[in-house]
Length: 116
Length: 116
Image (cartoon, rainbow over all chains, first blue to last red; front, side, top):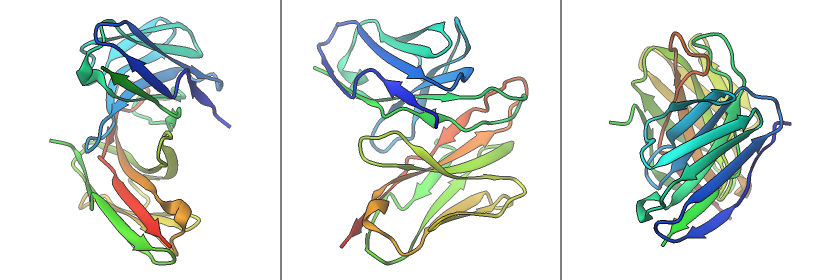
């Protein structure tokens, strides 16, 4: 079974703090993703990584950065947390395949972040 | 505008009854469509996946249909159980040349509540 774990289920931070969200997968997947999920909206892609030290911006990268130093670990960084970053953050991983293919993404349990 | 629209936003059904959820999409070129189930406080878990050539797929009491001509999909839940209470998310993948991960477009989800 694929397992994607996230470092915290719940997190409360103050405005302006630097926040690290960690994600680890144990299936040797090449691709890893960070999404945020807000009520009434679908999941929105923040960043993804297709290899160690490689990253690509998703649809809403502003205010976020990422780090992938090891294949199994993908970190999301909020350099200076703001209240509008209060959300559920979901990490996912998937295999890499032929161009245009779409392998299933396996999701972690999520981190509910509150910025006060 | 979201390229994946789901209806209804929420519904309440009695245990043992059937229900059908709808998904309309405009994603093009189409690669595949998945239905995910997301329990409260958990990450989404894949229920079914259908490619262009498939028009129905079952997973236990869940049956998904796809009409690629009208760009519509439905998820039918038979003989609902209390454990079916969750958000059901329609996810459509675009067939994109040059990348190996297939960008996903997420619907906002339908919240299903099964009551005794």
